[in-house]
Amino acid sequence: MGITLPADKLLLILALSPLICLSGGALAMIIIGLIKNKKAANLAVMLIIMPQMFLSGAIIPINNSSGVLLVLNRVMPMTYCLDLVRAVVYRGSPEYDSIVMFNPLVNFAAILALTIVCLVLGTFFFARSEKNR
Image (cartoon, rainbow, N blue to C red; front, side):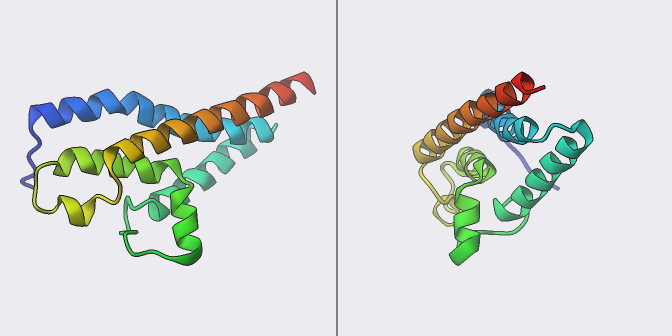
């Protein structure tokens, strides 16, 4: 495909990967805490992850979305994770402004905030479900 990625950008993406994975896991933790059946929880997690792929810009561009789609893609952690990785990949290129939606610091702060909120809520729901067992 002819895609090249310099080592410094690759290392930065790898350094951000744990935070990106933690944000996805934190969102799944809320679902796991709310649903007691393991099979149903696995299905629900997939039903949350798959729409994120479409609504976060991984497959379909969302730069010009509006209305409900705008609200949905702004509350999904994957939107900010993808935009942060795009900012790393396109840093220094002329296409940067047309591809990257937010400042990388805004993306990083949004990922941190959404991850913390999801972890707190997920921990609360999970602890409550285990206590009621």
